[in-house]
Amino acid sequence: MLSRIARPLDSPSSLARFFQNASLLSQTISRPAAVSLNIPGILSGLWDSVLRAVPKKKTSHMKKRHRQMAGKALKDIKNLNTCSGCGQVKRAHVLCPHCVETHPVDIFSLAVTDKQILSASGSSALKVHSTTDSDFPLVQSIEGAHKVGCHHVVTNANGSRAVSVGFEGEIKIWSSNDGIWARDERIAVDSLASANIWAVALSEDGQYLAGASQDGHIKVWDLGANGEQIRDHETKGSFGICIDLSADGRFIASGHENGSVYIFSTETGRMPFSLSGLVKPIRAVAFSPGGKFLAAAGDSKVIVLYDTSSGEQVASLAGHSAWVLSLSWSYTGEYLLSGSFDGKVKVWSVDTRTCVATHSETEKAVWSVKWLSKVGRSAGFATAGANRSISFYREATGA
Image (cartoon, rainbow, N blue to C red; front, top):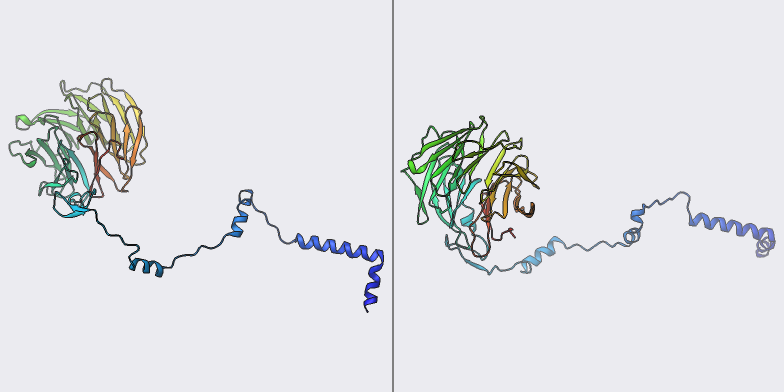
């Protein structure tokens, strides 16, 4: 049988057909017609690593729990001290949670003096914190200041006088004696004239009070003359959302719901020029310390700088992705601070017209931002809003 099988292969024609069939078979096996791998060029370099990938070993929940119970994931907190304000234990180099988180609802306004910061919220109490202590302790709580809450509070430069406006429409004057605030009953602002006032501003010496009303009037009172009204400016009837007085007392600026911005001269009582508005509601206006610029911002998400000597727009600062709710200048005028509805706080360089720092520690609205008085070589600022707490930043850029 072996001889019969071996014999046909010995012929040349049989051997040729055998090797030809074997070659075709090997080509068919090496390149199957039914299988085609089309690997994109972007993945061709990753294909080998994908084939060689090895599943990583996962730590089970039981092992994690055993490690925790064994003390490997737990660390003792040793850097504790006592809060100088309330006397309770807190972590060192961290603001006392018992002092800072004192408002049960949104904080709508902050007012700064050389030694203190006042805060107003939807609750009836006004809170006073010390800025001279590194813990920023709560030093006073003025209970029942406004029955249904307060939306604006302002102070003069030396911290001797403050003015607050409640949601019920009442304006209250406060005086400070050695850092303790009390209602000043000697000054009575006409209740009829102040019934529609929304935003207020106080002169540096605390003598003059300016208010923007809901029906578009800008009113000025002389607190040194028992609250007598001395000015009433008409602004075409649009809701006055914000107002500010220049440090030298020469100008009053107001921002309105229709997007208009107005500047009035306190000497003549007239509007020296008309400013180009931002179309959308203006929620914050602020004069620079020297009175050279006026910053205005609101629902347009853009901060506009005006030259107060000519009324021309000199800069436009873009970067916020939500409504800008508050503005504050540093004491040198070098930086401008802004807070927005999306929780972002930005520090702008006025010289370079750029944003030099952005903080987003909360996703809730930041209703108020204020620069603090300079202590030593560094300056800081405070922010507050819908997170119901006050945040303090020590460096000029908030680092």
